[in-house]
Image (cartoon, rainbow, N blue to C red; front, side, top):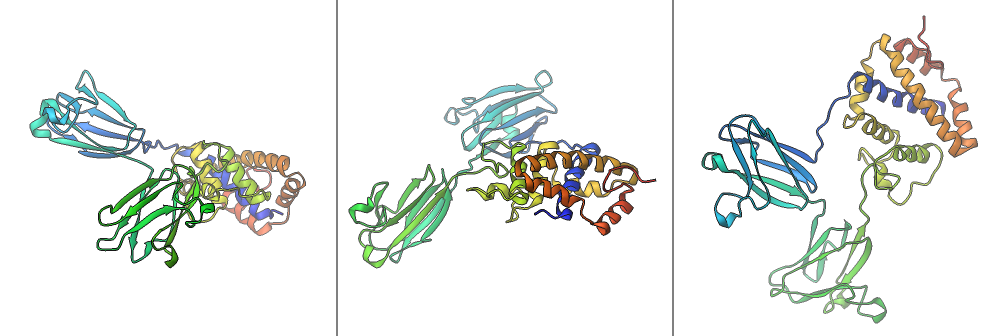
Length: 360
């Protein structure tokens, strides 16, 4: 059963998010965008980083420019092969989207000698993990990764010949070598394998199987932090599921990490508030919203509490509809005596904690 104080806190905090919205909806630049400013004979910054799918925009500040891909105008640098466009008073900006991870160079054809080349680093969310093959052991023996990540087995120089063989053992029923079966030696020191789907993949060394030389790679499904409902989008269903888990007893599901929105190692009401803040305001953190709301004057506290009333009504309806008797009990608990807490709230904000009306 939800305690009155707990539901009241949830109800109030959600309202503070709306209060922050009323006071300051701050714009936030998407992390997938970067800007390069073009001056007379230089551009700033010279290096930018974006995720795959991100966009770089060159913005005119002064002078005349032709922005082109490549490190220089030399033919071997393939100038302008990917993009080329003017950036000047008549063409104040130019944007290009980068879909493939990697490092990309660009330069200014009209100011090549003075400006030099710039670099765009397009990052991938996939990673490569190293496993050492040394002393009849794999280091580390257990590795936890996400689908799409790559494992690199690297043979220690001077070690004897090993193998990296998928399967629990060489017994036929364990399908040895079904995924990979490669030599690891001074002559063949590197082996890469990309795990493109969730799985638990045991592997072993054929020559040293009897010595227990074995390892495991566990690849889990990728998740988008905050997408707790698992539908691939960040929307209102995510904080709703968080609230159901916390207050109605719904199962956490197979990816509780997705519900830990603020990545503090546990899922609590703060995660629902962070989700709501992101969805309503867009980029402003819950900490900022709460700090801002805490500074609201008594005259403005009505906005805060009326926002809480709106969210509270929605939540009570959702919990009542989803949880049945549990939802009714939850709302009944809100009316339980919490006099000390409510009195403190009413003194601070000048608003009745039950009705939301301004006190005389």
